[in-house]
Image 1 (cartoon, rainbow, N blue to C red):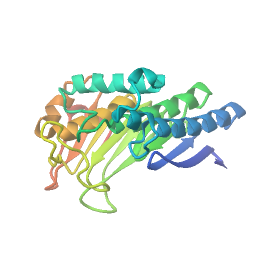
Image 2: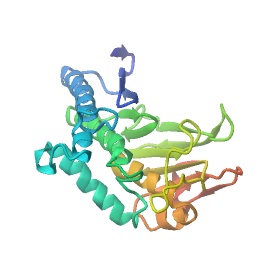
Image 3: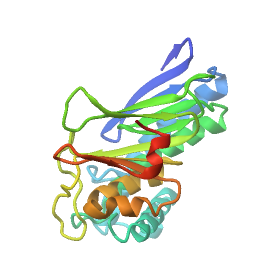
Length: 255
């Protein structure tokens, strides 16, 4: 945790990735306590949902070692949200993508949004919480300065594909192959989804923005039409051959 001239910053390694907190409000004692609680929250969620830990609730549930009613409320909430996302996406989002119970496609965004909410409730209204590259933005970077988020180009290392500008609460989530390869699978065939090099979604809150980005990436050719049916969401995509497309409303956020 470090104070700066403009607020408070912290980096935490958890959930197999890096979370960063950029708080632009004056760091009051309440905000400091909320930041510490947000970090503890992330570690609790990791203990519940890690598919790499045999003692996590989600692993034990998958192996029939416990029942759903034995799990904490957070597990019920996440699985309910996953069911809603599966319905909204016509099954293109799935918690059983490879034959095992894995809600990871929703958990990281949900945990990041919850951490952001803890800060907001404590009086931090101008924040960026970054969960492994997916962001929940609130307020502004400075009184007269919008947040600016660079989206890495998946085919040109070191270059940006676009820059998203936000002067109000906004979530930004990118699914792609640049860092983790073809890790998103088509839930209907079990094969890696390969229509896109990357797909970025913007929306009001990160839980569904991140989830819908995964679903759109898996959906492939029908993704643009589907995103355009979602109220409050816009998308930007880069195809493997370098071509790009944007939904009509994306012009309000990115180049």
